[in-house]
Amino acid sequence: MCLAIPGRVVDLAPGGATVDFGGVRRTVDLSLVDAEVGDYVYVHAGFAIQVLDRARAEETLRLWREVLEADARERGGVGE
Image 1 (tube, rainbow, N blue to C red):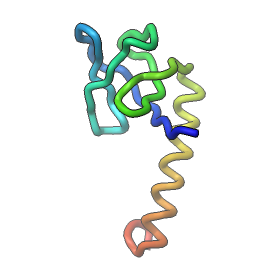
Image 2 (image 1 turned 90 degrees about the vertical axis):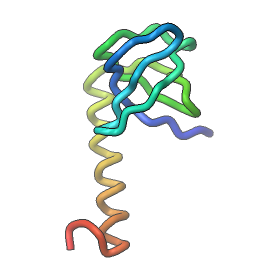
Image 3 (image 1 turned 180 degrees about the vertical axis):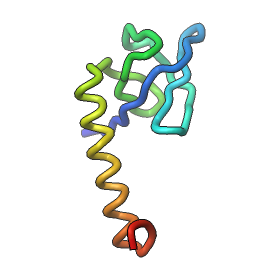
Image 4 (image 1 turned 45 degrees about the vertical axis):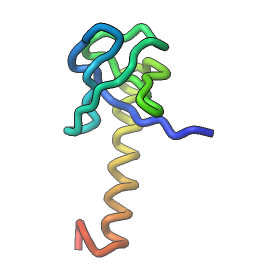
């Protein structure tokens, strides 16, 4: 099993892209997928492994935010 994080492609470069993960941008290898600027991709270990549609990406991102907010509350951070 692997953990893949969704992000949006914001810029293309030879062999890779800049992907935005909700404000954090990283360079990602696109050699395994056919993605364009504006596409959402799942990223694992620096590689985009799947292109996904916007609705699925937004739902996944919403769920990630819920998990992170719940974790922050448990640790006494956000939402207290």
